[in-house]
Length: 129
Image (cartoon, rainbow, N blue to C red):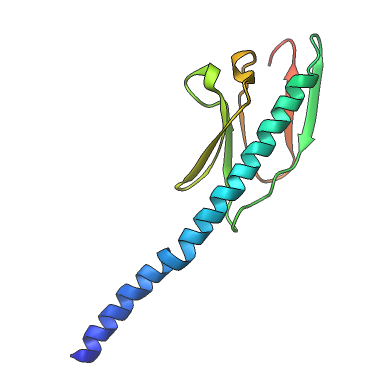
């Protein structure tokens, strides 16, 4: 009987150890990495905006990490309902961050999405897309 109770406690403990000692640090690492990724993308978008010609086209490629803590993630740019409050959203599962686009959302509409895989591209066309 004692062995049965101890085995039940061991099973419960094994279920709790996974979420406490493995998932929590991975989520904390992901949050910090997503913040860095969001800031980098926001900076690149503002740089393209600063260099954008009044009549013409500009495009730049950039690379972000393929995965964070061994898992893929998704980047959504300018996905909010209010076009003035545009931001960069980096998310995966329950971890999600929002980084502001440094005030360019009010003057230029910015939209798009990507993942960490491959080479990513930011493009601007004065005629619109």
